[in-house]
Length: 471
Image (tube, rainbow, N blue to C red):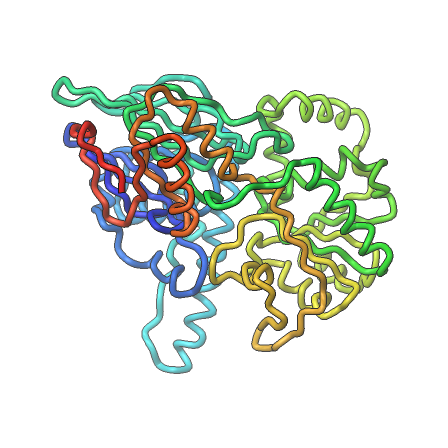
């Protein structure tokens, strides 16, 4: 009985953890590696295990860095079920299709260059047909229901408060009379964030795997964050410019629309035209609407009002490429929410091309930006960027608003771990080295927690946890 770490170990993306028990193999997440080109190229490397040997996948949530390689896993031989929350299944139906489309498109572009150089052609990582096949393996479950999924393995999902359907995974394991309970945090939400309920507190565990994305920083309060948004709007209105918001299609886009609807009158949003310029975000918003049973009390109340009259009458969905291109003719008075969230692709890059060189433009960075991404470069103060071979000056004001993060900050992570009885052994995953080390130090110093930072290919014996030693 052991666990191996094959992704999001010493880095943020590519979540993938393997548990072996009773001769069976269970995978926690199977995510895409994201970031720099050389990082994303690792998605084509062979899995460090035989995909055909995996019996079950448990998916914590729909984000591509957790779900994105499931179609590839199936394509290479995995034939078992994928257990996840029903809302995550619905979101994956959208997100994996989009991921497959991008994979096919990237392969097509690469092969055009290869043909000219007489180089061997490459296949897409997986196709839209592969993504469609993958969805037939998804088994939707509800929060709070215990389910036996393998001999000696029972699971339960609880609300992680990160995005719709995001789950904390509890696993009860038994082999040769020895019992262990492993808790995997998935990605934990920021308590008090819009729309979703707060993170579920789990009290019992023999081993905890916890994310550490923001283990080295604290978020501003929602009230402070909302005031920052108001201030940006005021500045942009005086300058008579546009506001661009690169946003993740799932989670961040819906939270922004919710806040705009909630504060429509007091923020004087009637002076703006608001565009959700992302077909995937539009579809995800429709999924959010179908799962209002997962909302917190305040959001549920606003949703009931929304069904009676529009909370955001100046919202426009731009589904087609032509509709998106028409936005480039607007020089003032537009708030444009578009993907991708880390600015590495999608329509936001086209809006940058037409706006980022303008002094009257304001850009709100509202989510995590991985190293090597265009968004990270802007956060780090880049004054020039490259778009389609052209160097463009950055004259726009860049506003990093961390309080909108869908991830718990350091205080939130420490508080969640502190809710366990008896300080169980803790392994930090899903964090860059500095974040994980900073969080590890605080957990050790303040709580005397037995904590380690996962590294790729680490193996933890689940039977000998009594000998677990902090790093």
